[in-house]
Length: 366
Image 1 (spheres, one colour):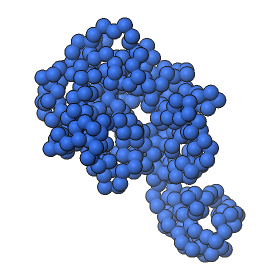
Image 2 (spheres, one colour):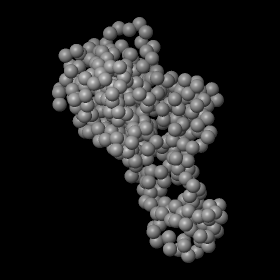
Image 3 (cartoon, helix red, strand yellow):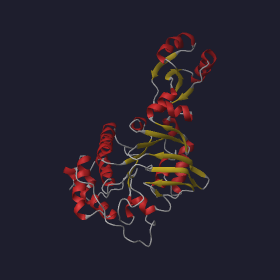
Image 4 (cartoon, helix red, strand yellow):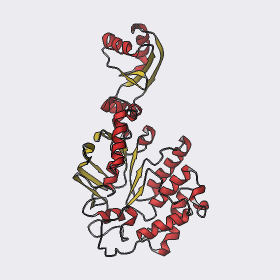
């Protein structure tokens, strides 16, 4: 791997912090005295962060820290506040209240310094389809002030990492959706950022392409000294994070490693299909003292040793059961235990959709 890249010294700017995108910040060094990135301070520190859009409370005073080198994920449905949070951390939205630092820099007072130290892969595509892959990356390198003699080796390095070096001279318009996402990740790495933000990096992609993207993300963590902060509403993707924060209605309702969160649930999930879900829920409460709910069209509840409980369920419920399944605790169970619904049901909540549309109209994303 080529030696770590260096960057041009910062240029004086009379309009610092007025750029409309991270790449438009005045080019300069990745770090400066007092911000060595030596691991003694968190890569991200958030304290009481709030964002409102009129009467809509998108983010409600969240608090968390992300360690240097960590893969940290936001798990939650569309409309939970994930993208609004990432926009504030990337200086694309100003907090209503609270504070946050990224790579040691304040997201309000030191916006340009934050922007020089982060890479950002947006949820929506931002590549220029009329340019080639290499032209897109060169444009990004110019915006960040990467030394000209270092652009080619860095471009080869990041494009090789995502398997696109042989397509560097092809126009982006000819790329598949998965190839474009991989190129967006490569572009976000061109200036060797200390923190890489990935906003729903695999949304809309087929399962095979999603797995491929995640293999690149895991390789990235191993090869680059970088902190990865990502948003997702895919449960299986959140499993790859070192820690996750579960967001619901603008609040962080849980924060820990995936395994610890699943262990806290403890019980197995039992899902049954019946002809009358409400009658089944009442019978479970009366005969077993079990609190059940309808999730994704079926009756769901948690019990220890679910497989051993199933024979008793058939014998004593008193209601015909069409099908039954038992599963070990998953992050969906964790989400349900904290929010009262599965992530899929939460995404289908019309109130969530209404809030999201309103925030989009007001200039937000979630």
